[in-house]
Amino acid sequence: MIAAFTGTEKFAFNRLVSMMDAISNQNSDWGSVFIQTGSCTKVPKYCEWKSLIPFEAVCEQMNQADVVICHAGAGTTMLAIRLGKIPILVPRKKALGEHVDDHQLLFSGKMEHLKKAYVANDENELKILLKKGKNAFKTELKKEPKKSTLIVKLNAWMEHRGGS
Amino acid sequence: MFELLCIESHFKHVDHFFVTFDTLDALSLLKNEKKYFAHHPTNRNIKNFIKNIFFTWKILRREKPTLILSTGAGISVPFMILGRLLKIKTIYIESLTRIEELSLSAKMNAFFIDLFLVQWPELEDVSKKRFYWGNVL
Image (tube, rainbow over all chains, first blue to last red; front, side, top):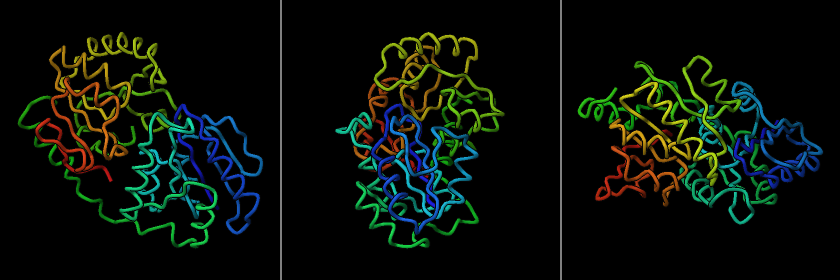
């Protein structure tokens, strides 16, 4: 099963809808395809879809999916990673009216460099990645959460500077 | 919002409230939390920015927080500015998605932030009091 997410941005991401429709129509190797469409104006023809779903439903879809494909937003990407997935990120592009700037391009490149995600910029790149097989898109969940230096230092700052 | 919840161990044991938008994920993630919903969208939206200035003033005068912690984006601006005017401590954590360039919200807030944190070393600039202390990954 493939689960795709466009997030809750006000900008439509119809390009991802088209990509997922093509995958769903042309390739039955992965079973069903679901896409959360958000503000997209294009309606999928071949995928299961909903525009918005509660957080619990997002988690359920991600947990059940063999592959998670999503726009390169911070929340969606981090949730997929925290649920033990190595998602395929499809970055939104300013030139196509998909976001205010191209920060998702840089972010997705960073995640790819850290081996926490793959990046697909178009349908062809997505199809090539999907040939990797199911095991390429999941990772072992850590039993012990990583100690966050950010929180440790934040707490120390608060102790010295006041506020509560 | 999800980035903020990733560091909730920092604040969940003290009195706190959230300010966000009334989206489905906010409603489910914050169902047991005290919260206020701001006007949205805020991306390049002057009308909602002005409405949120009045909204922010009302919230800050009612709740009188001693600290404002934000991960952006547009809703953070009136809170950082009015928070500083009301002598409230302000912490801003730039989004994980900002690697090489600050967001517009961060640029607008910079002067009003007591502690400015970025989540990648590429954006750290100690001379401008912008620090990297790790990230939420």
